[in-house]
Amino acid sequence: MTDAAELRRRTQEFLAAHPPASTDRLEFLRARFDAGLAWVHFPEGLGGLGAPRTLQAVVDAELEAAGAPDNDPRRIGIGLGMAAPTILHYGTEEQKRTYLRPLWTGEEVWCQLFSEPGAGSDLAALGTRAVREGDDWVVNGQKVWTSSAHVARWAILIARTDPDVPKHRGITYFLCDMTDPGVEVRPLRQITGEAEFNEVFLTDVRIPDSRRLGEIGDGWRVAQTTLNNERVAIGGMRLPREGGMIGPVSATWRERPELRTHDLHQRLLKVWVDAEVARLTGERLRQQLAAGHPGPEGAGMKLGFARLAQEISGLEVELRGEEGLLYDDWTMRRPQQVDFTGRDAGYRYLRAKGNSIEGGTSEVLLNIVAERVLGLPAEPRTDKDVAWKDLAR
Image (cartoon, rainbow, N blue to C red; front, side, top):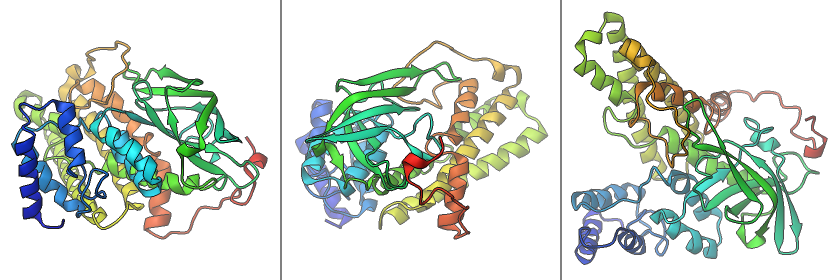
């Protein structure tokens, strides 16, 4: 299945058999997955047809023209952008068939249990422990900055299974049921007033070995697949021209001529060009990914995204003057997703501060770009060959 015309015909036949106007939304999405039109580059039987990734645009165009419902990708972004490619790459056949369909249809939301209070930027230093007891693993520890944990059914989790080896080698990757006993989710109220992030406490949580992803002790390598996909998902999202953060400030400039100054005009021109360059670079990166898995290039995209979002949101607040200091609502809420363009300038300015932390801090990503993209010498590391249990904490 590599021909665009054939794929277009198959999509049209699917639409004829499942008219969007008269088919229940969830049933439509399930049928789309079963027809291989969910993500066409996935294998047959897992929502795809084994076709080139670039042909997904053919399917999406036909479905959009017919008014078909989507799977609300922003709400389930962690599942789509991080969990799914990792499960596809490392999961057993049973795991793939169990988790991928409800993940894609949005029936089950996923979250990511990686960062910890004492191991944020240095993720490999994580201390959450998983101890084998028969066919189960008993997990104890704390995770933090967990987006969507309050609505998630499943989580991708890394935990330390061997403290006697260096930190990168004693980690194992699991799929955690967020409804299991011992999983406690607490809100983290942010500078925006919302609590889209959470801290998660794991107390004697029992995870069957059948929900282990990859080999025991190989969790760091498995996690790299997740992290590389995460950076592409954050920094390389598909946007139209003037999509994302640049849209509202451009609209304000056009609609409010009384706010304009020469200095603001020059700054707006610069960030507008930067936003367009980032958009086109993201498109090129996605085309390169069609031939393989994400690499360290995604770190560069995510770096640029964070810098640009903060620069644009700061410019928007200045452009609006006194209005930019207003804030619409400080109510404590626990939203299902981040809405950058649906709120006011003050929200965008405050929320963008987190962009240089989430998905890998900008400092860590600079190291990745330097070492893995540019080939510069690695920073000296004195803990590479030291057992985790012997590290200073």
